[in-house]
Amino acid sequence: MERQWPTVLAAAAGVAIAVLGIYKSKKEALGAEGNEAQWLVLVRHGDRHDYATPGWKDRIQALGRYPRDPPLSTLGHRQARQLGAAAAATLKRRGGTVRVLASPYLRCLQTITPLCDSLDVPLELYPEIAEVLHHPRNVAPYAERFQYFPRLVDRADPYTGDDEETWPLGYLERMAATELSLMELLDAELGRGRSTVVLTSHAASVALVSRLLGVELTIDLKFAPCGAYVFARDAKGDAWRLLRSGESNAPYVTENAKTTYPWGYRPQYLEKWAETHGGQRYPQGASYSWLKSFATGVSATGSSE
Image 1 (spheres, rainbow, N blue to C red):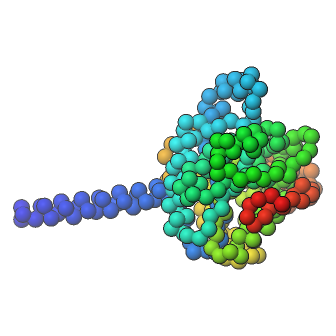
Image 2 (tube, rainbow, N blue to C red):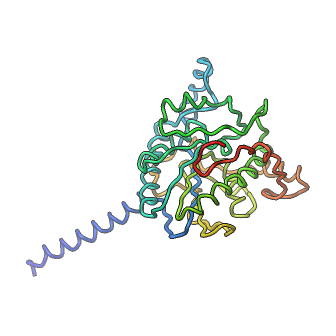
């Protein structure tokens, strides 16, 4: 009987290693699997440096730089690396082409760079998905960005107004137009075989989730830092299916801060939309007034037209 103990212990060790392997594989994946022809992965940036270090904003204003464009915090960079590892593992298993687009704000570029590095793909600017109250003067110009992000592909910002857009109404209208612009890009990619488009943005872009799924935008729809909403479809015109919610960044992100948290629209924002749109709840009632700003379009290769 005693001679059987090494065998029992070896078997137990094997089970433990297998369990740890399963746990590790889950941590290193997005938690979405499927053979659909196309995925859209909507990602939010990681923890913000200006929230973690409040004195940064005054300092950067004194230097005459971009107070509306903070970098990631130290934690945010760790979250970005974890997201990048999980997304890369998932997308490598999935196969097909991967195209990565991002808001021009620094925290979004920093968040998705680890994924681009792992997959060795370009990082394309997509200003249509920029932060609320956006204006091109809120961020550094492309030449300055390219110096530090050599993968970066430029794209002209469609916004040409003198003033920042309004919040929340102007931003929500922009998301309506962004959906149509984005669908043109996605349809073009779909014609090339299995494809994945990764779109890196901000918490308020959870409004785009409501549009893609055709559901009412409510206070319960939230977006975690480095969270990832994964949508799938097989053909043009198909309804999007949600494979993963971005309201949580678990299990691939292991640490969060109280300052950058799963964000959702406040009731007053949603009521403001309804009040000015005859009682219609978002996404209903959009005028698509932003469409005229998208005249340049997006080419299939990602360059400006």
